[in-house]
Amino acid sequence: QVQLVESGGGLVQAGGSLRLSCAASGRTFSNYAMGWFRQAPGKEREFVAAINRGGGSQYYADSVKGRFTISRDNTKNTVYLQMNSLKPEDTAVYYCGADPTFHTLVVVTTEKDKYLEVWGQGTLVTVSS
Image 1 (cartoon, helix red, strand yellow):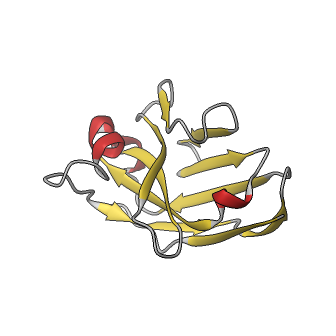
Image 2 (cartoon, rainbow, N blue to C red):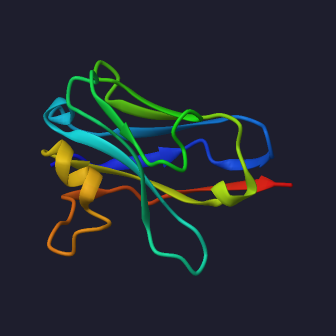
């Protein structure tokens, strides 16, 4: 079973950029689709982006489309989230998650019968105005 550790969070000004990393343990990383999620204070966890096992397919929430890019390097067991044109409303704890099924990552926050196999501990992103 893969284990995940996020890093790269911090304080950034609106309009700035930040890159998050999620390092996975184990040699089964390539068997998992990966996703990024976020949770702001007082809000439910929401989907941000997902990428399939090979990295050739990505899906984004409308709120980040055109600004965020998810990618992965299976040789390094790492998934990334490049965040550009950051807005104060992007402030949240960002989590990476893993699941064998790409579709599950996309719908897990909206379908109550779905859940991920693995979550990271989260990294805080704060965007100042």
